Image 1: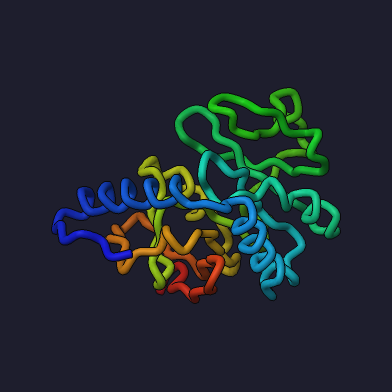
Image 2: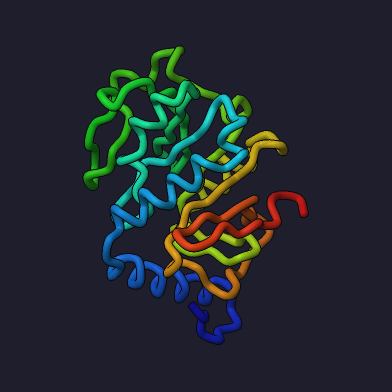
Length: 204
């Protein structure tokens, strides 16, 4: 999709977010397309070689990961899911069973409260070999915009430099160019139902 000509980066981002949300909400067959996209993610060499993988838990009309979590858990890899705490910070949780998830605020799947503080369940982002990243809109360079709160950006800044960042996106979330600012993080790949785009990644 082509983004409108607005020069202020913040305004452009907001307009892109609104267009992407509308397109994603109107998209049909989200379940089937999501299974295709997550299947492509799990077929990547980066996934095959990783021992510890972050899967995001889908919210609202994002590419849905929940249907593929059982297959991921059965793959023998250490599956980790993020959850939000106060101050828009993300923590990481070692998921071993879907029974460890519950439906929290805004009908979002998240680790059960009573399990989060268990030492065996806490994961440092530096111990992760591959990170699946959600977002609102992307471009073919790996440019990404989220909801504007920056919690994924902060977590990704602490990931190991050699840990690939792979975003999942429907085709309708792809734009010509996402205005990227200094704190924004480029993805290493963006996977959609029709293509896998190599991104710039971090520090490039």
